Image 1 (cartoon, rainbow, N blue to C red):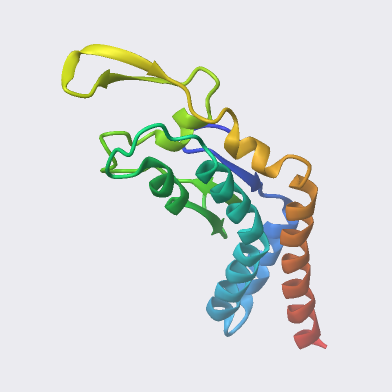
Image 2: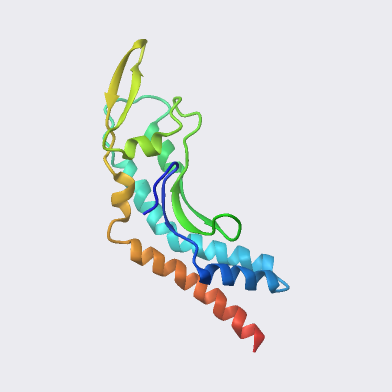
Length: 168
């Protein structure tokens, strides 16, 4: 599992993806094929993203502060695919929650066992410590990492087979 801000579960670059990306560039309609490959890889990870969204929505909420934190975090969880460049691969990523109660790192902080600190509402001098649902993101993928990796690799193999069939 990949960590770091923002965090995600991903399939990192390997020689097969780099070779496939080069082959797509060589094709006449390579741009369209790259779009299709990226869409297929995102579709392979979509069930994982839905699991993570369900996990954050299951976090206990004691108050009804606005804007709501859990739906804002869930909205920012999505599959991401990059083909070429500094990083190539596919991952489910929890993006930062900009403009949500001044808490851009909400996905990462609610996942941490140590929680986060924030000022008490109405009294900026008193701070409190809060914990979220510990490892909600990580646990959403537990035991399914190989399944998602296989689905992404299958999308890559399908595209490679499609390009190879054109050459024959």
